[in-house]
Length: 474
Image (tube, rainbow, N blue to C red):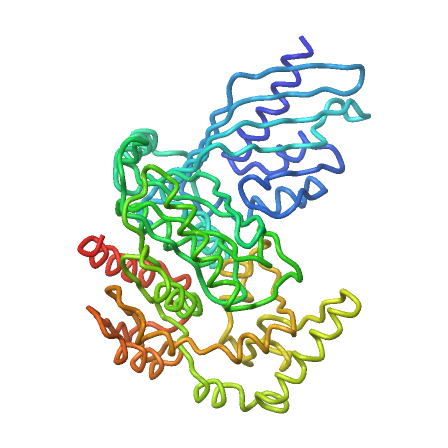
């Protein structure tokens, strides 16, 4: 009898969430709950109140037309006033008309700890163990954006054909799956993810892309969006956190060093070459990663093609112009970098500045107004995995790096996708002009830099252009 009570308490969490009955959801939770979704979202477990949990879920779930949680295979154990419930779970999320596909599905298992307090049995810990994601992995960001814009659905009853749409989605080109990836670079553990196309079979081979994003960023930001899109178009896609960032090792944290990032890119190629299902490999770099990848490709004939999307491609002249407004200009930044490096060497202390800010002029990316909304908006790039800070000692390696210098040595076919409203368009053109081999440049002037990071239509267009071109190269 008590087993059934415990199962009903757990079941209520999912049933009431799908119905958006937040007070009923809260009734299943103890006053303090350890919530652990790190296998899905990264970060660390958090201790939250029931209201904090449902507040977070209410900022996402109503953005979907419907959700359905299917929980099964319950296993219950009770020891006096504590209990454990384990179950398998499938969560189906439906957003009609969404670019990239209408369905997002996650499967895995749950572990619940319960306590018998003055309110009866309640959940005091909830852990999700992700096994697989399929469908449109951009759907959560779209749903969250809808909630923030007040575009929630009045009715949460799932349409009769939602399940049919789900099973159809498993057979279409948008149904990608994800595996964890890990490799070594200069003795450091680099963590990433492999995105696999719907047609994936272990005994087949696939054209493969390595996708990384802007400086200071982690894999869950723009790299994820492009990996999803390219995997949906038949490519295997690897994303990873460069050393010093995200889940990867490396001290100090949030230290931008182009030379080390180039080494990580080459280590990623070595990792992929060891996988039986990987055929030819291309680099796809967004913003600053385009420059890092250009240098890596120039030195590595294992790379068959190179794509720059809104690439930050600079040389000394561009750097001088861009950072002249900083306190002391380039010379001042270099002096601060050298001082911070000495402090780190002597004490182990890392001096930081904000990576992006609209109010702090010392930030690495500073623009009053809303110019850096992507980095500061939680519905866009300001995700928990990204720390919004940069080690001051990064200025030296960054300012002395010349991305354009690699152009004359990139002999692989190269595609540049850029805009006159994106970063350093003259740098992109100069880089393109110096490429010696097969090359193409496409200008999407209706988009700005941040559009290439997050706007669904821009990401879809850029990914489509890249995929169409890469199919001919790989």
